[in-house]
Image 1 (cartoon, rainbow, N blue to C red):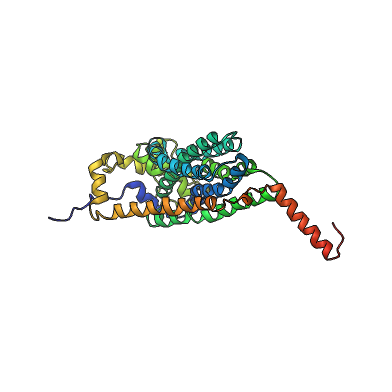
Image 2 (image 1 turned 180 degrees about the horizontal axis):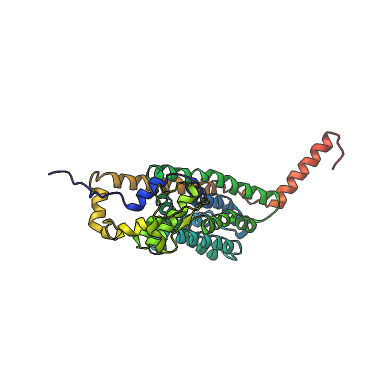
Length: 354
């Protein structure tokens, strides 16, 4: 029997135009904004590592209940990825990513004023759902905005922001400790990156042109491509006079040169053979298992080991290690002890106290 070959297709028109426009300032802005969005899982990990011991002392929780908060966050992320992905296919990648970011910020504010453990647990679980939605829709928006040669590289570049956001989150925790602030202020201040990400998504990014074109919203897709061309300073080589009669798709340079991709998209709209909805379950299974049936199960096993054992286990580990009564020293007592040690050191050195 011959090898099953996955169905081939020509490169869709929007992807071809994105390849022509190349990588520019617009794609760089998208990488920065979505890099902050992709760092939410790392930020939640560090938040939980700092928040867990504080909640144990404030609410007299057992280590199991503290670890359950982390489990609920990752469980919500796993459960929410699928329905939020369908929502992104229905309402749009940019809109869903922005909605998830705003919802996650609002839920963090509610966590900061949470009165009891059940409220905190429920809010952390719902936060995990929107984290899954942000990662899902953000990855789709990024890949559908980049030229084909830069898609894999851009996905990797977004994860470099996890280190930066992790350092910022830890610095916020240290600042709250030195400023004698409790865990509620810490949770409140950690929403600053989410606020910046929401502003960037709302004012500096556009909807995916691939998504718009496959939803038959051709004029809107052309307008996004026009904006990318202007931002990247990659104008078409020839003018398109036919597009002038199609309304809002026109863009003008400072020299007065009028151009738009509207005419090109509308002209080929009826002849374009590829549409996402033409692919059914059978075609998707052939694409996944056609050439290497063992690749997908292997990747799923590796992701499971990384996500649930290594990543999640490393998050819960700091909570489970410190189980002695010394872990519940309050911030005031700690600062008083440091101040007393400094005074004693100055007295022994013969220096006058400050």
